[in-house]
Image 1 (cartoon, one colour):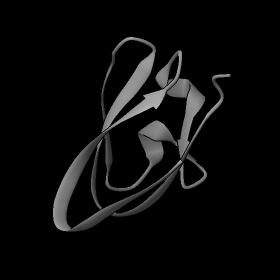
Image 2 (tube, helix red, strand yellow):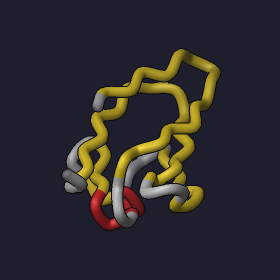
Image 3 (spheres, one colour):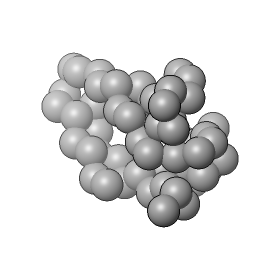
Length: 62
């Protein structure tokens, strides 16, 4: 999924995943992505906070 957050904003994103290790952002592991903070797992979703910008999030979850 592609997420675009306007300037001077943040967003909370729910990404379908069985674990945070299943998610990449802009081709990097979730815990190594710039301007992205992993918050928690909730109901088979990785909950992340992102700063303004464009992010391509990919989950291995089927």
